[in-house]
Structure formats: C-alpha cells, structure tokens
Length: 101
Length: 203
Image (cartoon, rainbow over all chains, first blue to last red; front, top):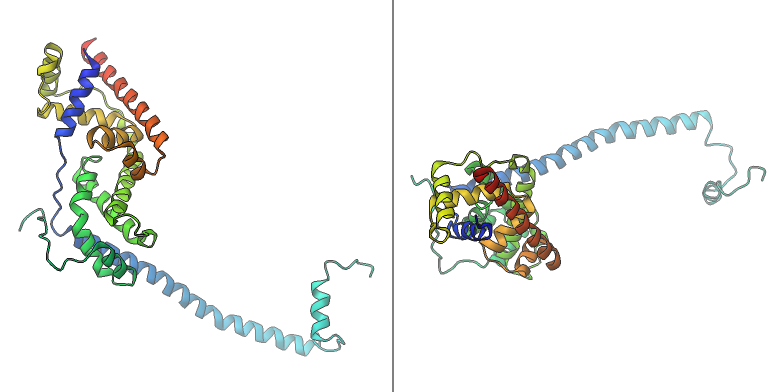
C-alpha cells in the first residue's frame, strides 16, 4: 500500500469536504442572553460586596468608638508629654532604636 | 419556522465593525448582536472542522463570542475585526481539542463496509479511488480524530484549509519556526496513523 499516496488522497478528500456554515435559528439571541446574564452576575457580585461592606461599617465604627471611650476612661491617652510629631517619630524609629537607649 | 438562519443581505447603512466595537466599548451591549450575526456562519464553519456533535459546535461558537465580548478591550484595531475574531475562534477550537483529547484512542478495526471497500479499491487501483466518495471523507475524519490536538490543528490549517505558515503563525500565536517544526511532526504523526491502518487491515 502506497501510504504517501493514500495520505494525499485522504487530504484531498478532506479539502473537498467543506464544513457547513449553517447557523441554528436565533443563535445570536442565545449568545446575547448569555452575555446579559454574565453582565448581571458581575453586577450582582459587586452589589453583594458593597452591601457587605456597608453592613460591616456600622459594627466597625461602634467598636472604634468603644475602644476610644475605654482608652479615655482608663487614662491611657492622658499623662503623655509627647506631641503628635514626637510620638510619630518615636513610633517610626522604634525598630531602629537599641533596647538600651 | 426554518431550522437554520439564512445569510443576511447587506443593507446600505451597514455599520463598520470598528464603529460597532466602539459602541459596545461605550456600553451599548446590544450592538454586539450585529457582530455575532455577521460572523457566526464563519465561526460555525471553523468549529465544524474540529468538533463533530452539533451541541459541542454550538458550545464552541458561544464561547468564542463570549470571549470576544469579554476581551473586546484588547482589540486594538490594527487588523480587521474578523481576523482578531478568527484568531480567537482557532484558539478556542484548539482548547476544545486539548480538553477532549482523552477520546482520541481509535482503531481501524471497526471500519464500515464502504470504508473497507474504498481502501480495497485504493490498494487495487490507487489512482482510481475517488476522493469525493463519502467513505474517503469518513476515513479522513477518523484519521484526524486520531491525531494529537497540535497535529490536527496544523494539518487542518496547512493541508486542508491551505493556509500559509505565516497565516497559521498569526492565527495560533506560535512563531513561524515553531509552526514549521509542528507541521513536520504532524505529517509524521499522520503517516504513523496510516501505518497503523495498514497493519490493522492488511497484516
């Protein structure tokens, strides 16, 4: 059997077998419906995320207020002689400061 | 109600692809339907080269258009929209072949009677075996399904669709030397499959 010729013959047969370009009825509408659903899902995801954020905001604010109140009552924010600038500098350079200094 | 849609006749006020793309980018999603209607016959014809079942073909075409919609921002307008879309279609078909390659193991022992007759005729009179016979078409489809995804893609584009190496490089994203190497390997793989056919049928 001449395999090279068989290959040529079969490839020629494949070239003659042109695939149909027929499109199922209303296929474009199906694609558009899928695209609309995808867009809807994405919007839903963002909406759910923002709702969660808003819901989380109230407890966070409440907790912050409670901590500030506790700090005020316990006197942790009083009695310090440092200004805001000095305090910030101390905090930033805390890593570089030797323990004995 | 017709089962299949018909070719749309071009209206005199038909918008250019680039105008439609710009409209879709600005939020007019409905305009995308015009692009789908315009190019779906070509994408269907391409998908039918790689998948056999109509449900799989429809899934491929749908995926091509969804990807096109999602990646529309990456279309820079340097080449015609059709070329960009066909690149996407070819890559989606290749992905489909890779996912479904587990079904690739076929044998030539279950050839139909017309296929066997066609082969007998080829063995007896190689030049007179008709290329337009249905049996030759089913045989070549069987042969294509035995190839690896890369080989099948290259053989389809190079030998069946008669595209140049440069065109294949643009469609697949592979470099020109890589296309040449893969074409060489694909032909060798095809010959190996034909040797298997010879072994199973005539030894």
